[in-house]
Length: 263
Figure 1 (spheres, helix red, strand yellow):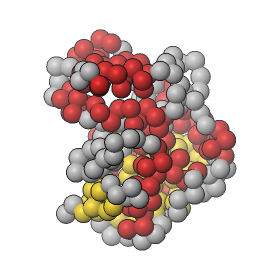
Figure 2 (cartoon, one colour; figure 1 turned 60 degrees about the vertical axis):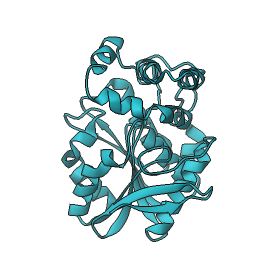
Figure 3 (spheres, one colour; figure 1 turned 90 degrees about the vertical axis):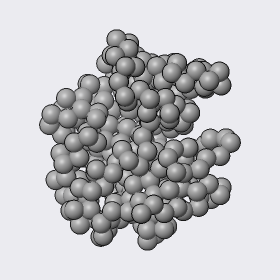
């Protein structure tokens, strides 16, 4: 059953809980809503946790505000954590991983942080997005060019080859991406201009951090995940064999590593 909690600015945030036990908040990335993490929520519930899947603001059944700020999403996480008991562990995927790390760095009552491929760029394996990418995508959205915004995000923001994006346009998933295109500036703002690793902010995290990457993922994603583990005080990196950035489609592959860490 879907419930809602009211964030500090009055925005309603929709969520669902799965299972019973220690609470784990699941934070999806770009063009994701609570349905994207629902299968992982089921896996964690089966393992004895209470998993909380929610719609980040601007998505699904959650509300939004006229102006976006990362601080408002931190407030959303705080409201959810308070609702499920005042403290929780957290798992974040992609830009949701960066949001989860930011929440821990800002002192939210998060006991353990697990992240999968936060999209920081630390080497030369791929070009950095332009510092003005969020502005250019926002401009396309202002012109109601949602397809163009998604294409620009994928090609420049995620490094997806243009020929693959062209094939994606003919797939059902493209309509899903276009439907959530208005939230792309949110995720780009979370990642920061240029996707640089925020070493000083990560150093402020004092709780244990498990940073994961996929064995079949691009090298730049693996490097970013390893760099996060090195930057925090109590970090560990592990690789999920055979998986890529789409690991949420194979949630059973995360069962052992997450339940072992969260316990």
